[in-house]
Image (tube, rainbow, N blue to C red; front, side, top):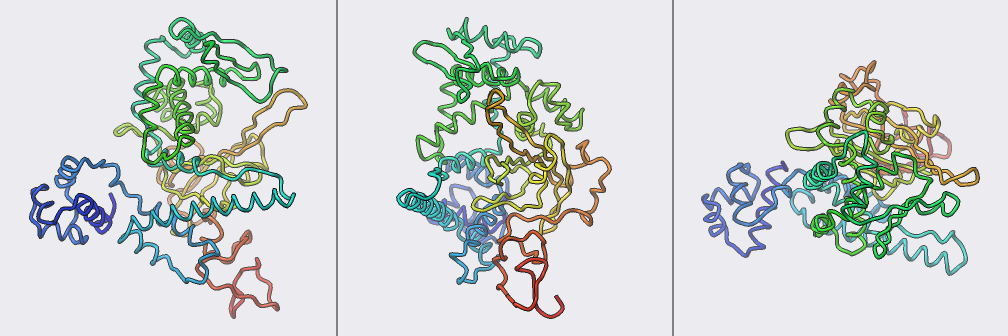
Length: 476
């Protein structure tokens, strides 16, 4: 739960939204006005009984009371690390106080900054195109961020999709040894969809296309078996549970049609994974095999990336797996996927720390790398990383390479086979990492690319430190 101060602020905000006095709200919650006053000012904790009454009387989603202070603080710190704010002299304490006392103002600042970043990117792109410079690449659009936030707020767990996947498995009688044929039969005999295979030389850019008018599903012959299964399950989710996907994506966090369509695709992918890797079986096998990703890939006939995705969704209350974070980067360091179930914060507006092993994975393609790391606040993490390659077709087709990073808090590391041989009881020998250079205060890091936000830049032309921004004063 959030701190008493933050909860008190939220309750006061709810009361004002409903235009109630403290006495009126206290009557609805069946507590005294003086007790409510103490709660609103963070001087008394919010009991479970009062919280339940609050949810019942004011139709409040209890999920909104989950502790997201750390995430909000981290995002605001990253925002204020922009050189735009250098002259303001803001500190970590200032940000924490803003999040605690005025969470709505903090959200407003984040919204404004995202809009500012989008407008700045648009202006830069337009200027480059008008001047004939640049590569004409598109800017990063806000819908992707909205979908990321939507998934993060749900904890990457959607019980209704899990239930729908189980219903489909029963209806179609899908088992591990017949899943392709069962799904193909269900598409044709129940949904009236015919599958047509497209020769590899015909197209290298589209792997699945559904013609709704003709009820034909076109699949590329380039797809390996595991991807064929996934695409069939994905299409079944879009067709069989169309209304459910509409309901789930009708969410206040998704503010545009583009964001809702992208969210539908994301949730259909979630559904496909749940069909091919049923929750209970996946959790049992993951625990039994100590989260050996490659063994799980053989067991479920799924790719390394698919297994990592599925492991991040094992969050059913009372039957949780290890809370993982996951990140996918390309060789240029661009982050194309990220989810934090471990509590780690990923940079949203700038490059990630180069000391993460997800970057080093490119040095040993196809091999799993392990790393025990420690953040500036002393929090330890254990991470594994490996490259994945997707072929575009034949010899002349380009191959896309990414690195997948999967990690958890150090306290969960003993449950992973990869941690054998590590002393996870201490972070003494862990690799020091950060979120991004501007937020990291380790001045003597040999890979520092920018000066830290919190310290004034000192330059002495007569001294060269381990990096350009290392301390240069006496005794350095």
